[in-house]
Amino acid sequence: MGTQAAARGYRAPPASRSVPRARPPSARAPPPAPVPSAHSPVPPMHFRDLISRQAATFSFEFFPPKGPEGAESLFRTISELQSLKPSFVSVTYGAGGSTRQLTHDLVVRIKQETNLSPVPHLTCVCHSEAEIRAILERYARAGISNILALGGDLPRDRADHDRSKDAFRYASQLVAYIRKIGPELGVPGPVSGGGPGFGIGVAGYPEGHPATPNRLRELELLKAKVDAGADFIITQLFFDNRDFYDFRDRCELMGIKVPIIAGIMPITTREGMLRMADMALGARFPAPLMRAINRTGGDPDAIRRVGIHWATEQCRDLLDHNVRGIHFYTLNKSTATREIYLNLGVKDSDGLTNGNTHAVASWTAGH
Image 1 (tube, rainbow, N blue to C red):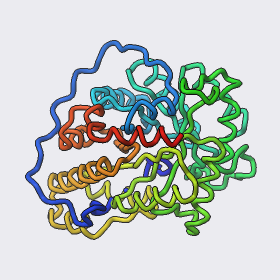
Image 2 (cartoon, one colour):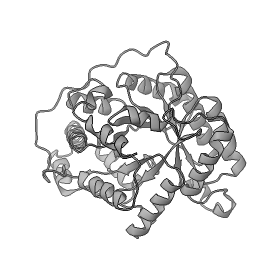
Image 3 (cartoon, helix red, strand yellow):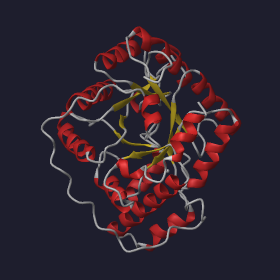
């Protein structure tokens, strides 16, 4: 996805139920600051402590490069986004052996060489319990405090893999194991209390999970992940905020009280839009967005402006509705995310919390 499918998608802003107003194209994001040559070590911070200190979190997702040659390019992107002061960054995870190792290496390198707090993805598929434990041990030694636990999809080259050989079939089982093993590995818990162990995130699907057409059953499965020990939810991408608000309300009715972070991925190319449809199966592209794309006549720059403007309006509306966090699926590029911040009138994530301070007070009061 940006979390189960390297992702998750948008509709017209929910409050007005209308397509975002056209406006003159914004200036491109200013050039990023030079890549820093040194950094201050970031102390481990459990997600519960993070969310208790911020009205909302703002985070970015990356995927590991396919080979060592792509590592430096990705690291330039990561360094460019440091100036936006994200709450954390997540790194996706493939079930293939080489991709797995690239994820582990990238997570540790981010922790050691940047000011960012990495949150690695970890999936159930193609894993024994010993392998899962070894991965968690390495993360614990590196000072990684939080994990995003996912069911995962079988890699294309292992479609015949026997899932009965996996230690965990469902994400809820993986969550329970991570919750149990964290104290054994000496992972410190939240300063605010609750005992030692990793902070754990899971995936949510505002438009529904393609493998679970029964929406009532789907929420039961999500609640099982939370009951097993999940601390927060990051959603699949969506293109209509009304889908997110309805999902948030349904979660509340189910007794799901953990923070729900909205997944946002701006459209920057027509080809990218088609890839999103493949990655985030079930993601709906509302008619106003499709009309706006069609009006461009296929002009690449115009498509990009439409996509970034649409995502900007999504973020503005989410902030107005006290979202607990926004997770940007960057596709390993920094420019679109930086332009969204610029369009919102802020230079970094600190500015995005202005006007949204009531959210943290209302959430902590309920816990």
